Length: 201
Image (cartoon, rainbow, N blue to C red; front, side, top):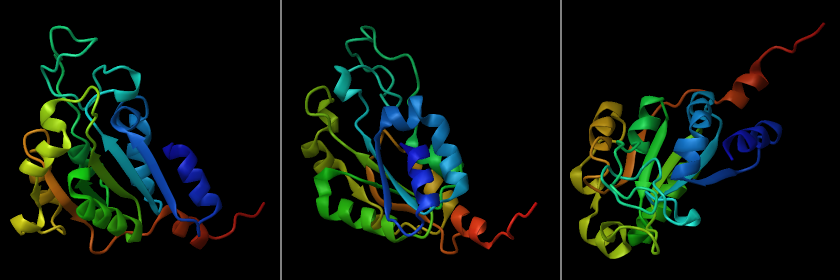
């Protein structure tokens, strides 16, 4: 979805462009697109539904499945370390990174709105329970009991290193809110193209 979204934004810079995908699309088959979307810094919002399982294809392991998880295709449990979406996008230089859960719809709506209003590439990881194949600790009731808002931790969202520190707790703690928001975001790719001198033969 990301390459198409970038093309649309370049062709029609005035459009509000939201991109939706899952953890498999974003960090497996489409993983190569994420890094380049981040470095181009087009003004689009990428929302990933991270349910840590391939919920639409009968419950196989996904890139964010925890080590040891048993599924229909991993009878002995996963032998692989999960991809950490938050740390991944922060390390690639994303200018806005947030996480939410449907266990807190008001908080989720707030981070999505902030992401949309941010002038550049923004990433929202949504811990999305899969009610059919998901683990018990990944369901809404468990999210509601275990989540910690970054606001309650007095997290400084302008500090990328602090954001990366918190992101390393992915899979162990459920933090919600804005991990990182660059207070002085760089120009977006479409702004650079518009400002570039015309190329003449």
